[in-house]
Structures are given as structure tokens and as C-alpha cells.
Image (cartoon, rainbow, N blue to C red; front, side, top):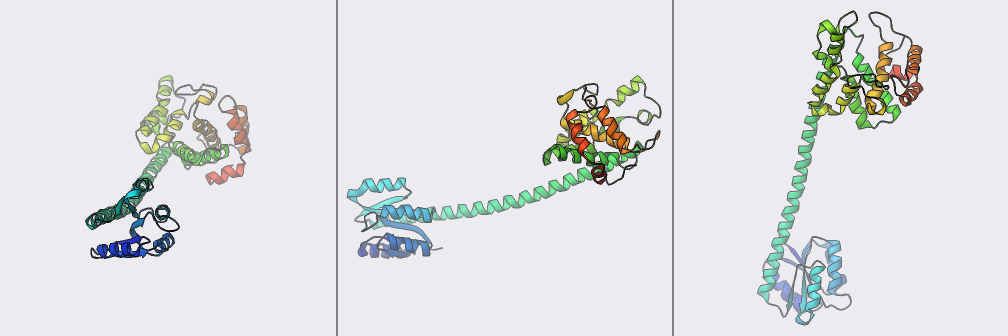
Length: 348
């Protein structure tokens, strides 16, 4: 690729001398006798290097230097100056000039400076191209990784959804209790004003709230009668077990706190840690309400599903004891139809 050089000098003889010298080296030279001509050439030609005379009639080469750097920040500018104007030449270096040459010229120095400038231009161009290619490759690899992570996350969700359905079936739940409470959690969290990222983590936690029951034997989990003290002690370990399972998987760390605290009560009489009030994660306080909603409106071996108004009565009665009163207020504003649409079912 041949570099384009602008030579701006009010002396035609100097312009011709520089053009002849540089032209023999293969450069494409453009001449300007003043700043306006120089700017016009810069706007229409792919100038890579500019030799600018400091002293020209009208506007000076210093002004052309400033405007050329604004037009083409990557351009390499070399100032041309007389020996008695060295201070100005040096100040131009601070304005972005690469170097300077003095009159009368040493043509070997002119060629050396031009070659150095050319090499720098080529390195800058190669680096720019490399950066562009690197950015493109990074974007491509990022998209590949994002797609792969999406597939992994989807596989996680599908696998765990299947596992949760199996657990629900093991406990003889009607339909999918865990998927319904996930839908209810998303609805109530949205009404409360929880942001989308936290709602997504809550949804995972709601879906997986009973994952810890995988470690409880059927003798305890499916016992038709009341659990004895030892059995109840084992049963109360399932939030801890579920929490340990999920904290080992980065994708589910945000869901783990709901799983650990989903049996806590607002008055501090829950388990496993006896948390009270706002020390209970808001995700678990929300879940306590929607879990009660689903439990009461689903058939049980010992009773049929209860009507929606019974849920409202229970929630109001237990406000401040089992449930967060502020969340109860939000819960009561959600209409029956909204819960039904959320779960894709109708209450009896």
C-alpha cells in the first residue's frame, strides 16, 4: 500500500523538491500552498503523512496541525521550520506533531523521517486491524459461550424440573405443586416490586424449595399419621439439605436462600433457624404466602381443596404471626382470577 503525503508550504520550490525526493521512494504526494488548500486535500484524499511549514501566509502551519489532528487523529504530522523558529517547532510536538525538519533540508534526514513515519503508520494500521479482528473474535466467542451457557442452564432447568415433578409425584401431589408455587411466587414478587433478576432467582428457589426431601426416607415422608419427635427432627433437616445441594451449583446460588428459609415464620417460630421478621429473606416471606395458597386450594388425602375465600381468611388471621403483614397487604390486592391465570388452573 502506497502512503499519501501532503506537503503544505508556501514556497513552490520546496514543495517540488520534497515531492521529487519522496516520489522516488514510491510515495504519492499532494501539494498545498496554504492552510485552506491543505485542509481541502485532507478532506478528499487519504493522507497518511503531512509535512507542514510552520510559517505560511495567512493561517499558520500550527493551525493546520490542530485541524488536521481533528479531521484525522491517526495522521502523522511532521513540521517544517527555519532554524530560528525552533521553539515553535518543539511546541508543535506537544500539539501532536511527530517530528520536525529544518530548512535548508538534509534530504537523507527527510527520507529517514518519512520512512519512520511510514513504518509507524503501518504498525498503527496493523494494530487497528488486529484489534478489530480481536474484537470480532471476542464477540463470536462470547456468543458461543453465551449459547453454550444458555443450553447448560436450560438443561439444568429441564433436569431439575423433571426431578421436582418426580418428587411431587412421590408425595402424591395433585398436578405439580412446585411449578404452581413458582408461578405464584413470580406473580406476588412482581406485585411487591422485586426486580427481574431477583424474581428469576426466587422462581428457581420456589421450584426447588423441597429439593432437600430427596434425602428423606419414604417411611417418614409418606407416613400417613403424625410424625414422632425423631421423625420430625429428620424432616426439619430438608431445608438445610436443599440449601447444601444448591449452593454447590453456581447457577442456583441465588435460589438457595429461599430454600433454606422457606419454613421460617414471621413470629420466629419457624425452622430451621428460627428467624424472625425482616431477618427472613423476602423471597421466603413471599413464598410462605403462596405456599399456603397452593396448599389450601389443592386436594389433600384428608380433605378436598378449600375455596379461595378460606385462603383469604387464613392469611388475614395469620398476618404478623406466620406471614409478613406488609406482604399480606399486597397479597390481598391480587384478585382470584390473577392467581388462576398465573397457575393455569381454577380454584374450587
